[in-house]
Length: 315
Image 1 (cartoon, one colour):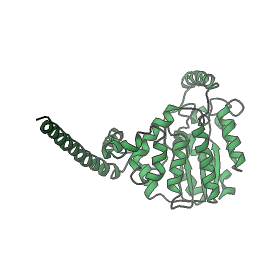
Image 2 (tube, rainbow, N blue to C red):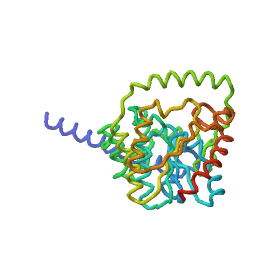
Image 3 (cartoon, rainbow, N blue to C red):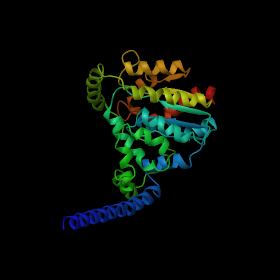
Image 4 (cartoon, rainbow, N blue to C red):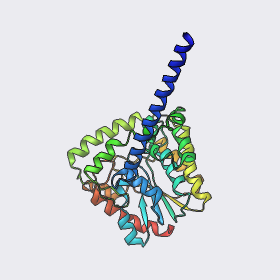
């Protein structure tokens, strides 16, 4: 009797598991189809860059990159083909991973890495945001898999679920299906003009954050990823340029240990740095900023034009 009951339980368990797997395959396959047929938004830009984007110059970085570099201006002024790969909230682990995917079958002339001063500090957000790479794992498992495993060793198991690969993208996809966003080769304009009150409030917040960061520890994985980014480009004989784009919070080089280490690593690979953080033109024109960290559309266009003259020697 007991054996019969046990066998029945096992059979039911197997059937239940098979049903779950089939549901996962169906829902995951539908989500994958919708994901890769979207034509707007951040995930579309990522997919386009991985599959189709080609060019002489690729720009890497966080939101400061996506909002500061206008490929249309760079292309027209320098007679090149460029693409902005900047992605909001993403730090150096993401940049290094995207670079490896991109350089599998491309050989651009120049990689521009827009530096965020706090990239080397420990940050849970940096790991959490890597989830945006999950939809591409099935195409680049050897590159993306090890990075996602830094979130959790269980990722190796969860990633076999198709539904899991896309469960964090649904809201984003639906939003941009309803409200499409034009693609300016990865550039995303900000339209707010920062006023005096905006500046006063944000300056106070920035000062508090700056003071709280003085005792933060470095994450060895971030240091390794930054070195890997530079090493990969150098080994492939691709020029790299580090850029600190305009920022009116404060002069950071002499006070930020993370940025000092970034500059030290860059120097060890012979990578030049263009520093616009103290550019008097932008410091004198707050109306060119959306907030203290980001240029608005007009500011980005002016910065892109001013950057062109500095890029010519590297092309």
